[in-house]
Image (cartoon, rainbow, N blue to C red; front, side):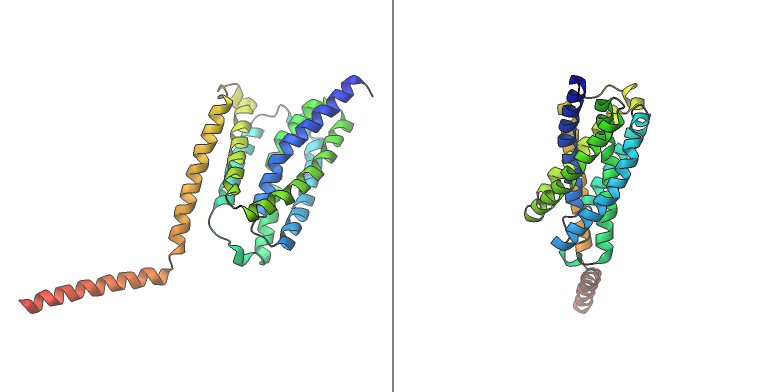
Length: 247
């Protein structure tokens, strides 16, 4: 094994450790509302689908490196995933429903499709087109992804506030992908790293505020609204009747 190959292997290991962590955060967030049994199923089934898609992406890595719009589209999709993870609906009382498990699996697969782009593009660059090194990077990323996801899901179950930190990382990744897309990069200078983190923080706060607002509105039962309006109308009628009697 040559020095160049060893350097490539080292680079791939570092890339997988760093970038697969983001994927694990998203998968852990997607499975956070499930029971321990369904959470494991979602991670395994979703991971199995993601592995198949990663194999496809790995085979296409050399072509993906310079494809315009690819990271731009991926970044936009990540914003949508961030919203889905914070949107109201689906509490702990619904974790046993098959639809909830299926939604978690779909979210996991979609998240991995999008977030694997930066991972595979980076690994493809480090491998310099060597198929064996590309496969090495793929095989290494799978246990990091699945084992890390289970740990993150458990932490989110115990500390729900970590969800917002995960969404922050997700949005930062989305912004980074957008500015690194060849189409955008050739036309707009990438902001400093601190500016990207600040923008990600503001966007996370905005999404959280909208989500919480919708959650508060949805939490008010329709019957309660109708009763309140009826009570208000009744009180108004009593006031008018009293005024008429005094006359």
